[in-house]
Image 1 (cartoon, rainbow, N blue to C red):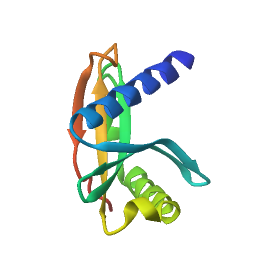
Image 2: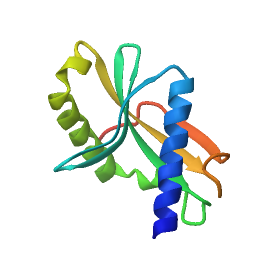
Image 3: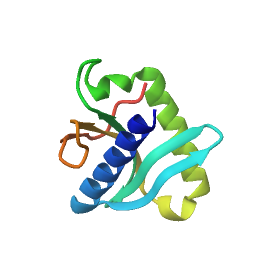
Image 4: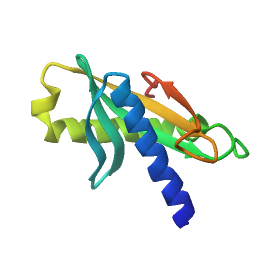
Length: 122
């Protein structure tokens, strides 16, 4: 289990670095509340972006984005609402969206990264 956790942390670090290099302002990582955890919250111009990161070594059990099913998307939206309620100062007059990042490969530092912008919420 520790190996899986380490891979997940490395994937989140890679995703945060990717977002920062793409011009996003990463404002929170691993934010928790009673309803769960948000991997990354970033600001992209006039939009607050809640980012779910999925890291996998292989596609043996499907692409990482397949793990973000309708139930997970609805949960991410609820978490985004909880985060915005606590951080009204950051949210001011900004849109809100959910993104997903897949990190696929044995070493998260060099693995293939895909960024899915504006995940559809059921």
